[in-house]
Length: 261
Image 1 (cartoon, rainbow, N blue to C red):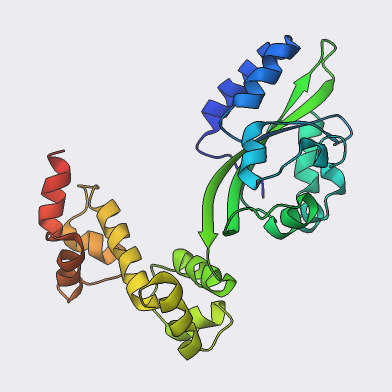
Image 2: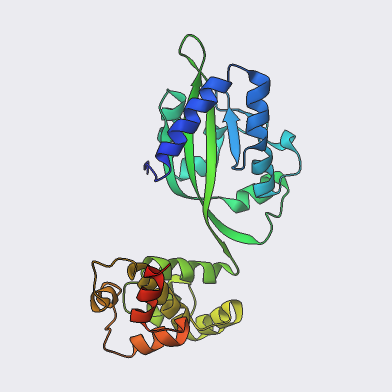
């Protein structure tokens, strides 16, 4: 899915800057090399012609020769499976393309580039692709800038469960549904989750609720009861006491505290 992200204005300015400096090849290469986000540059046929240090570090790839001249974005099976070929081609035809929340194929990267990619099991990134033109207005390069949004560590089953909870935090907790997402029995899932995370799945879910409540308490247009209701819990129930236990102050005290900052 193509989606414009919140960093679009910055990317537009960045894109314009890249086009300006591209006239000075040596300068552009230095800027790309030391840019803090992973960058890969492709030729018109989709073959990689440049990767920067941040890209190498992100995936712990030892040698650029694994990528430059060898990797072709149009021949990547993961790109095809993800259904992103059409969006990528748009960039090579002259458009700026924004791709949001992409699942990074770490297993493929580990296999192809002989890297362990540290202890990250799942990674999600945003990607911005934009063309660089020559004097005749023809696309000669496509620059891809990657921004990592989320990473997960630990067993794959726990990663799936955490992703499920992240997407369903507003619903009532159901151990059967969460363990189903993890492809484990409820009993085994609870044991594995506690071992990996140090807390039970339910407490993990409650802590997510607390963080959502804390975020919404910034909105002074909502009463505290409305904040709790928006997060799927009753302010007059036991959850207000749990909030104080975890945060150290009552919801109203927390709101006063953030107002005074």
